[in-house]
Amino acid sequence: MRKSKFTDDQKLAILAEHDSGVGISELSRKHQISPATFYKWKKEHEENQDEDKRRIKELEAENARLKKMFANLSMDHEILKEGYAMAKKYAAQDAKKKSSTKS
Image 1 (cartoon, rainbow, N blue to C red):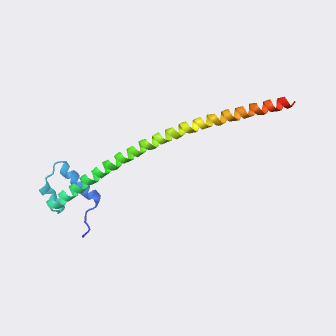
Image 2 (tube, rainbow, N blue to C red; image 1 turned 30 degrees about the vertical axis):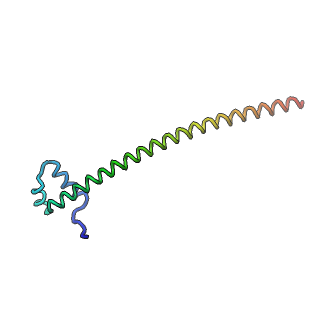
Image 3 (cartoon, helix red, strand yellow; image 1 turned 90 degrees about the horizontal axis):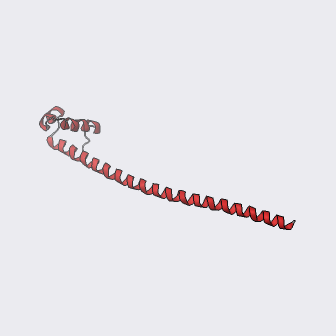
């Protein structure tokens, strides 16, 4: 398959010209492309936008899932931290009681 002489930016510029109201026949003459090529570029651009939108939705869903997971892990960490502090406090009290009963 032959490589296009137009870059993606040039293709987008041509599509933008059409969006601004320039006719397809005029664009075809100006840029020396066939109307079929223009419509092919337009279809590819729309498909890429749809893929981008789908990917953004997937990423947003994954981000929400990760935020929820982080919140749960943060709560677990806090609970364990408090439990460790209480265990340490009771161990110190027990050690103090044992040392005072020996005396």
